[in-house]
Every structure is written in C-alpha cells, then in structure tokens.
Length: 296
Ligand SMILES: Cc1cc2nc3c(=O)[nH]c(=O)nc-3n(C[C@H](O)[C@H](O)[C@H](O)COP(=O)(O)OP(=O)(O)OC[C@H]3O[C@@H](n4cnc5c(N)ncnc54)[C@H](O)[C@@H]3O)c2cc1C
Image (cartoon, rainbow, N blue to C red; front, top):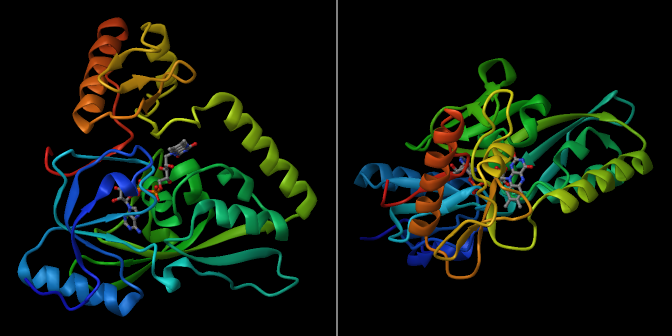
C-alpha cells in the first residue's frame, strides 16, 4: 500500500507512546507535519477504508498487546499543532489563547504562570496534550473552552463554538475526528500569585498521586458522589497484583506497571477490581482509561 505522505511507518511500537509503557504495534503510524498532510492522510485512509485512530500524549490510554489495526496518528511532530497563540490584546479583561492540540498541557501551564493567566492552575500537573484534555474534559478544562477545531475522519475541517459543544465529567461531546486546536479563555491575574497556585497544586499532586511508576492515571471514573479510589481501598485491594500490574499502595485508583505489565494483566486486574467492588458495594466502576486496539 502507498501513502500520500512519505512519513507513514509500519509496526511502530505504541508502548513507546503511552505513559503506561504498554501496547503492541500500530499497523501504520504517521506524525503529519501540518494540516495539509493530516488532511491528505485522512482522505487517503477514507478512500481505502482504513480505520484511523489518534493518540495525544498517551497518558489516558491502554493499548492492546496485539496492537492497533489501521492508521494511528500522532500530531506531536507538527509545528502548527504545537503553537500557542495569544489572540487578545493588552488591556482586554480576558486572555484568549489558541492552542494547538499537540501542545503539552504543562507547557500551557508554564506560560500561563509566567503571564498570569488566572485559572490555568486548574491544569497544573495534568499530563498529556491539549487535544487529549479536550476529548477527556480533563480537569474540567471545558469550562475554559471558547471554540474547538476538529478535522473529520473524512478530512473536512469544522470549527465548533462553545454552544455547539457539551462538557461533562470526563466527557466532551465532539464530532468524530481529530481535534487540531482549541481556543481557551483565562482571567488576567498576578503572575506571582498564579505561580504560587500552580506550585500548591503540584505539591498536592505529588503528595497524593502515584507519580513515580508508569500508569495511565486513574483507572476508573468516580461514581456520582463517591471516590473510586476510596471504594477500591475499602475493598482491601491496595497493593493487589496480577502479573506486573499492581494497584498502587499510595492511590488505589492508580494501576501501575511494575516493569513488564501487559495490557491483559491490566485488564484482568481491572476486571478483578470491578468484581470485588461490585460485590462489596453494588457499584460497578466504569473505566476512565481509554482502551485502544485489537482486543476490543
Ligand atoms: C500520573 C497521571 C495523572 C493524571 N491525572 C489526571 C487528573 O488529575 N485529571 C484528569 O482528568 N486526568 C488525569 N490523568 C489522565 C490524562 O492525563 C488526561 O486524561 C489527559 O488529558 C489525556 O491527554 P493525552 O494527550 O495523554 O490523551 P491520550 O491518552 O493520548 O488520549 C485520550 C483520548 O483522547 C483521544 N485523543 C487524543 N488526542 C486527540 C486529538 N487531538 N483529537 C481527537 N482525539 C484525541 C484518544 O484517541 C483517546 O481516546 C492523569 C494521567 C496520569 C498518567
């Protein structure tokens, strides 16, 4: 098979693209350098009936051991996808920032700290990229969103304004496709105070989360009015292990990779957690990590 872009590789190991360090190969893998190249790839895949998936920072992903069929796209090498542009003028009460979807969320936080973008501290310590954060509505980032640009799988560009989007807990209603950028709004604030708030959030995260071992953050969503971590802890599951996948003794909703965990280890452990918690409480925990690849 030939692709319009020379940059398409075969059998790229996706474990190297996820914070869990788990996952088999992508059948095809591309890192387009800009919008035109991305559109060319999508139109060609559409013409040939090839399944397309997209990954951001890979920090909320569990990729199958057998890998992913079709074309997997990462925008991280494309300069336009890594741009942060301030759209507002000095003196305007709010700062409007257009952010490429491959911008790492922590880059935005650093910039926001230096310039005093009030509210950016909400995102302090959140791993991954802006595109992934939009899709997951991570840290309720949706409250800052003014508009999002999405490219459909068929290769057409669409801009959605806030009233066309819907945000909920770990959910954003978006048309199917790839987020290429988002415009966010922040209040103007004192940079020193903003940096202090960022530091405070980071200290709290480091004290409470599992940050030293590979993981995909929280494995399960919090049920309404409850904490998934607390339910797992109360079921006595901290430290439980299947293969090299273990429930963090520090934070019960973090499943960590002790070194050689497979996707099957993690899925078996998640299944075990769900069964134990449902037996103890009647609550079925819903996965927060997104599953990508062959097993599904
Ligand atoms: C240590 C740790 C701590 C974490 N803490 C938090 C936390 O406090 N709060 C929180 O909400 N989350 C947290 N997470 C989870 C994760 O960091 C967030 O969900 C993050 O926003 C995901 O971004 P990403 O770029 O890594 O997305 P990925 O994991 O790459 O992808 C997530 C989903 O978005 C899709 N996607 C990615 N990019 C695009 C795009 N450009 N267009 C369309 N779809 C796309 C993927 O297909 C996938 O379905 C944590 C994770 C870790 C490892």
